[in-house]
Amino acid sequence: MIPRRKIHIQRREFLLALRYFLSKSPCNIEYLPNWEKNFAGFLGVKHAISVGSARHGMELLLRSLGLKAGDEVVIPAYTLGALTGIIESLGLKPVPADINPETFNSEPSDISRAISERTKVIIATHIFGNPCRIDKIKDIAEKRNITVFEDCAHSLGSQIYSKQTGSLAEASFFSFENIKLVNTYGGGMVATNSDFLSERVKSFVKRNPSFCPFKKVVASLVENLFLSSPFAYPFFYLLSSPEWNIKIYKIYRKTQKSLVDSKISFGEFQARLALEKLASLGQRIAERRRKADIFISILGKYTIPQKVYSDARHNYYFFVTLIKADSRKLRRFLLKKGIDAGTGSEIADNWPQERGFSCPNAVKVYKSAIQFPLYENLSDEKVVYIAEKVKDFLR
Image (cartoon, rainbow, N blue to C red; front, side, top):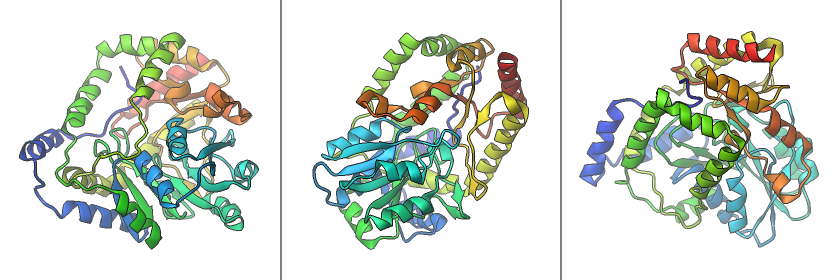
């Protein structure tokens, strides 16, 4: 099987994690501050604060503003639906902004239409690593005294206007989950130039330098082995069934709880890994871009890839494209050829539809989008094989 996702993991990480886990104490207390300093330098911002996850970071930033119950937060109509639960847990109201069906991001005009007198925050998301028009979004927000936070859970290493995503708004939040480009088996980061927001977020964070997500390291090793094996086929087959997909999706979402008052930590072990993986990030993103170019050159007129603006640099965290055929049928076809592909809520959620909002572009993308495997250690031969099989189905 060719899985759609592959966790970036090195063999020695297991032994290192085991050492940290058994010692119950940090081996070097300098890794965490060095990591935060290096990350801030990479982005070009003043402050970087390690947190439990990207969602945790978003929650802490919203808490830092001292918002009132009923205040509104504008977020994209096509994003991770679990974000709405975090917003609501703080007494706030999530309001969707429809998206551009070419970029899959919310455009400034979409966001402007979603703003009301109660809007206090805009979450500007760089979906799948594709930078949004953050400068124009900021212009709209500044005229109305609205705070802008960048959702960079997908976009570490992506650039816009020759600057790193996450360096352009009041603050940003990042994810280091196991399938991210910097994988520390969980954890996240808040980045900002604001001394006020930095101090507020730090006041909420509970430090535990000895924390080591050993179980997640083991689970990641097992996942990589399982998803690449023939034994994964029955699982993928069930996932491709609409009925089973809904059941599996619901089970997964139940594990994604709100992180309010969470004690999840970011430890020295994770910081040590992060420093190493940040150093190789540029090289790995370049490899992803090269493979994405192979996909695009072969598929040509058969699919509609995510549009990237000329002044932006996509990191291709996910390679998602639109097709005019039934995405679920293509997924089943590819599965028979030994290829795993993602559709529907496995890629992103169309959460407004469940709440009675009208966001037609998000509906269109949700129904037509399909995610193909793309990661730096996927061979060129497999990229060509996947693309040719997609062509076989679509022509």
